[in-house]
Image 1 (cartoon, rainbow, N blue to C red):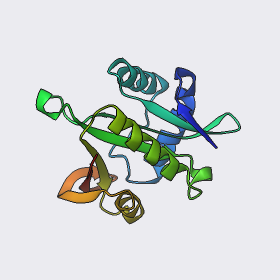
Image 2: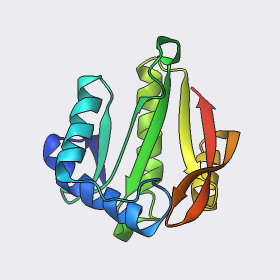
Image 3: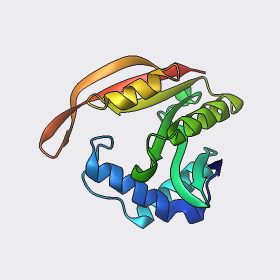
Length: 162
């Protein structure tokens, strides 16, 4: 596996990974799949604002991606970032997520950020444990803040001081 900065040509594969997670879990609090145009806009916005997106590749095939972006828009939050990590379902459980997490934590430190935040569905204990393994701590639990497929969802915020 190789990790490097993702390129715009990776966006279609990112979209497929994202939409699979959206369809098959509550990890994403959306109900409608994203279009290719949506993903290009997302990618371009991250890059234009100086936020990195890293890809994990097996034989030049994108099998996961991670990055971070602004936590909130107000200037006071400029040193806090929210992370994103998604791995193709066929490649989960083999260390790709861990390699991506290490990469984005190191990049966030190098970029001078102070806090990294993860937003996780409370039923996703695997992701909560994954974040804990990297030193994230739970800082907030927001009951029933989202509705997906007629189910109220509880959002957990976890953060790591960089």
